Structures are given as structure tokens and as C-alpha cells.
Length: 507
Image 1: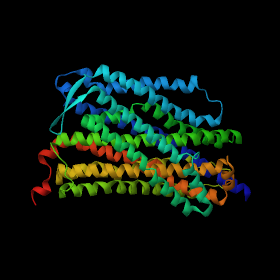
Image 2: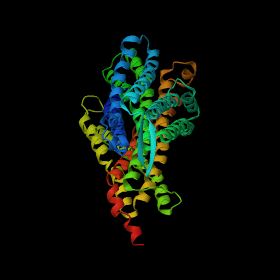
Image 3: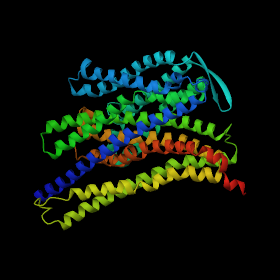
Image 4: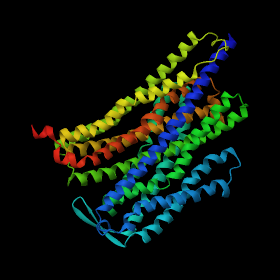
């Protein structure tokens, strides 16, 4: 009986590790990488579009027109220099130094990038130029744009560190979530949700300050370059974001290979540090998505010929309230998709135990390929409805209701989506690290909650299971919702302005 139990557990652990490794590569490496790169490309496009209707765009001053691209170039150089601080100047000698070293990368890159922005703002831009935006003319000085880019850059750092505070098990919020596991999974879920909602406050204020300052100084062009500033250190952000999945995969391989317990402890320490830095990466992605979407929204309004977006107008308000609903609809779809895929995986594992002779006794090899196929097929098939929601909403709204209603939809989805995305990502990250806090048992408090298999640990595992679709699926994918809708609306803006609003024309 014991041998059978070990074989069954070994199969389940192997399947879990394989699925986890595949998921980390697909989600955290490819998914988050493409998300951040997409934000970078879209913010560059928005900045270039607004720059084209400025005085240096009309006079064909290509150096000034290329200012967004120059920021990107400086960011690459800065991030290359920043890597030296981790590899040569401050070498890591102990496990406890891993997380501080990774976070130091963000601070160093932000400081160096501020200096780089100051240099290119004064050398690449004319001392004074005019932005023709929303039917008005705004005179902008080159130092205005320096402050726009810099405030976006430092707002990103604030969002990153706030995310780290609410998701790292080194601080009280996650430790409180872990402590709530004493009384079961229900209180763990309650504390985790409360943490996620509370973690929205500082990032939203940071984004609001960045929007106000950048718009006051340089209108929509200021917001576009502020988004670029937040993403200018993207190379460093992607590096520390990928650190967690790589460490997690190493730990899974060590477990499957039956390596010593000490190796697993080291990979767990690396993974715990990586979980926090991955959460910081998600915070950067969400914050930058908000600024990028607002910049694209401004470009859409300009291209569609809308002078003002009045929320008291019924056409705009219905769009606003429907747009605010879309992130919840989208999240419901993606979370249910995760649940459906997991259910099919469990059914396949049970089927293999019943139909493959000798599997229970450990004499037969399980069909790993079929399990991986189920996950891959489900991930592609289940994403069709959410994808259709994102792609069809601007087309249907713009064609039937017109550009004013579509503007309301974009504004509503932006405001609602950012809040839901931040809370979902931070809640999931906190639950994950609360479980790791109990498992590691580093402090006396953590030891009192453990070890593995204890009732508090079981409650923490339930929270982590709930949190995975929140932090790895619904939260990050909301960035795509708000950005892609804005991009699609910008592309079709002339068509909607000329031929849209069919429903209102015939009422």
C-alpha cells in the first residue's frame, strides 16, 4: 500500500512539475515578455503619432521626432551598464542577498536612466516647440518633457516597490495572510482579498500624479513619453521578471531528479526571491499599460475628431458603465478557463490510473505527452471567447453606437481594468508567498505555522491554488484587454467617425 501511494504521488508530482515548468515558460517568460514589449511598442507608436502633429513634426525635425526612439536606445545602454552592478560590482555571497540585489537593479537603472533622459532631452529636442492637440495649441519646453519622462520612470519604481511590499513574505502583509491560515482556508482567502484591494491605493495615486503632471506639461505627448519612461528600463525589468520562473523550473527539475534536500532548499530560496521580483514585473506591466492606454485613448480622440468627452451625455455614459464591466467579464472567462483545463487534467490522470496496467504499482510509464497536449489545447481553445470579446467590442460599439460611446467604453475599461489587474496580481502573489513562508520555516512565527502537511499549510495551499489563476492569468491578461481595445479603436477611428453610430442614426 505504501509503495502504491509513493508511485501515485510520484506520478502526480511529476505531472505537476512538468505542467508547472511548461506554464512558467509560456506564461511568465513568453507571456509577460510579450506583454511588456507590446506596451513598449504601443507607447512608442502613441508618442510618435502625437509628435507628428507637433511643430517639429510639421517642420520635419527628425531628431526631435525620434525623441521616443532615443529614449528607448538610452534605456538599452543603461540596462547593460546596470547588469555590471549584479555581476561584478556587488557579487552575491549569501542566499539572503538575492532579493536585495535584484531590487537594487531597479534603483540603479532608474537613477542612471534619469541622468540619460536629462541629456537627451536637452540635446535632441528644441528649446521650445508647439503641440497641436485636441484642437488647441500648447507651447512646450524641452525640460517639460524631461520631467514627463522622469515622473513616469519614478512612478514605475514606486509601483514596483509597493508591489514588492504587498507580495514579499519579508513584510507584514504577507505574514498576516500566512498567520490567518491558523483558522483555515476561509480566513486566508478573506485576508488575501483584503490585501489585494488595499495594494491598489499607492499605485493608483502614483499613476494619477504621473498623468496630472505629464498632461499639464505636455498634453497627451507628455503622457505618451511618461509611459515610455516607465518602460525605459524594460530590459532590467524583464531580467528580474524571468528570474523567478527560471528558479522555479530548476527546483522542479531537482525534485524530479531526486536531488538532495539542500539543493531543493536553495532553489526554493531563489524561487521565493523570484516570486517577488515577478510580482514587481507585473506591477510595471499594469502601470505602464494604464499610461499607454491613456496615450492611445488621446490619439483615438484626436484622430476621431472628438473635441470633448462629456460623461453627462447618455451616449458616453452608457459606454463608460459597459466599459467598466468588461474587465470583470473578461476575468470571469479566463478564470473559468483555468478551472476547466484543470478539471480535464485531473480526469486524464484518473483515466490513466484506471486504464494503464501496472501504473499504480510503478511498473508502467504514464502518458505525459497526452497531459501536456490537454493543457496546450485547452490554453488555445479556451482563449477564443475572451479574445473575441476584446476584438469585437470596439468594432460593434464604434459601428452601432459611434465614437462618443466607444470613447466611454475605452475610458471605463481603462479605469476598471487597472484596479482589477493590480488587486488580482497582488492577491495571487501574496497567497503564493504566504505558502512559501510557511514551508521555509525561517522565523519562529513561520515554524509555528508549519511544517508541510499541517492544517495552516493546507489552508495556505488552497489560497495559492486560488491565487494562481488570478496572478498568472486574469491579472496580467487585463493589460491586453485595455491596450488592444485602444489600439484597435485608433486604427478604425476614421471609419467610425465617418460611418459609425448606425443605431443612433435610425432612432
